[in-house]
Image 1: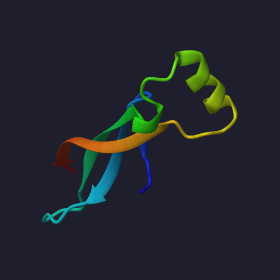
Image 2: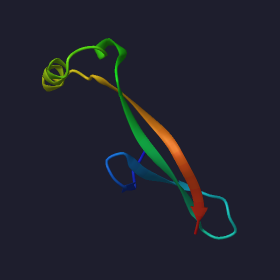
Image 3: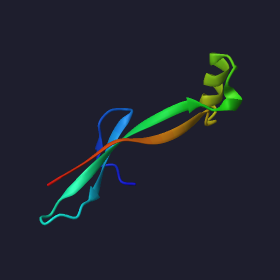
Amino acid sequence: MKILFQLNRAYYAVPFPTVHRVVSQGYIVYRTAKSLKPEYCGLPGPEIGARRQKGEEVYDVTEVPEVAFTGW
């Protein structure tokens, strides 16, 4: 998936082609949602931070489509 516009840390927009009588395209705005993996819940913050520094992936990342719109 190609990111065209990074809106902020949590949101980005992706273009997509549309079918219209003139050349046009639409956009979908996605939100990146992070949540702590279940196996790390209950651990103290410093321990989670230490694991992150070691390179462990401690978050599940989900891409959530928030809004789509078309235009030309």
